[in-house]
Length: 380
Ligand SMILES: Cc1ncc(COP(=O)(O)O)c(C=O)c1O
Image (tube, rainbow, N blue to C red):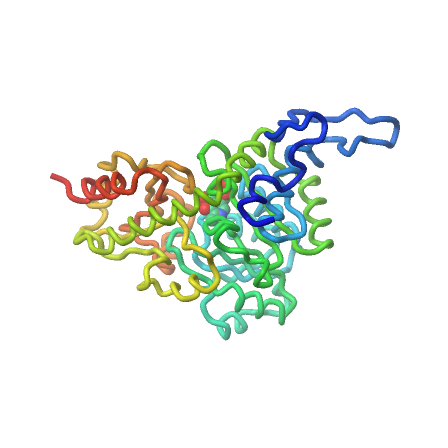
């Protein structure tokens, strides 16, 4: 089956008891045993749940992986993955990862004896030079949040394989519709399903996709032991979102490209970041490894913080809100919102300025979106 068909039919669908086309929500904590020691396939919903199972199978198949796991949030998925490691291990991470990921690494996992090096993953020699005898994991995000930097996934996976280092990619921005990292040799894929996979801003969720039996068993163990799983209802919402993922992603991209082109020619805009623009430094790599460039566009205004504040206040269709990937367009200010948890010096180092705005371009009529940008950028 091809991607669009899998998005609708992967996993056990229709369900076997009554043939329900919409996956039933098994809103139960526990399951009656047939007899002592014999279940009907499920015993307790922390360990496994039939609604969750359909979502997990669907995400695994869309990513081309071995098994999928659904978590309460993207951060729950990431925290669980970090427990594959132990005190004394060293991790190389992209330097411009999501602010919450940076916070998890620096302010939580370091206290458990993990050691981190944050690096721009744009050069093979630089990565090789950062590898230490205790390096166990390489963490990457592409396109990155919020600067849309592109990492050459195949190159990074190759370097890591050579040194027997586990690779983890946060594929939230691209989604498996635009990027299938496992094809390039990545070991584990994580998602904030809160974003495009769900697509409607009505759930927070996360996912992990594995590539080996060993990783599958370990992630299943950790999910159950740590209790980081998603609820049945949330799984159902994400499943429903995934059914329309391909059509949504195509339209997100079409609208995002139009918005990026609009911004590049606007006199009040200093820089536009969108990997679909030929001027973007990662454009060629993105074109090679991705099927599309996604729906997030970031830009810097001229005129400092005052202009940014006025712009964010004047928007009418774009809402000033955290998150991204939903049908409704959102705008946010990374320095005070999504990346506020990143220290100012680190933000400065990676290029997240006070003038930077991130747009999650939704599925509204694109002329209405550019009209909104125009009136917000040109007050008075
Ligand atoms: C790229 C990326 N990864 C992970 C997360 C964390 O996901 P969640 O908010 O679902 O915990 C986010 C949230 O914004 C994100 O943008």
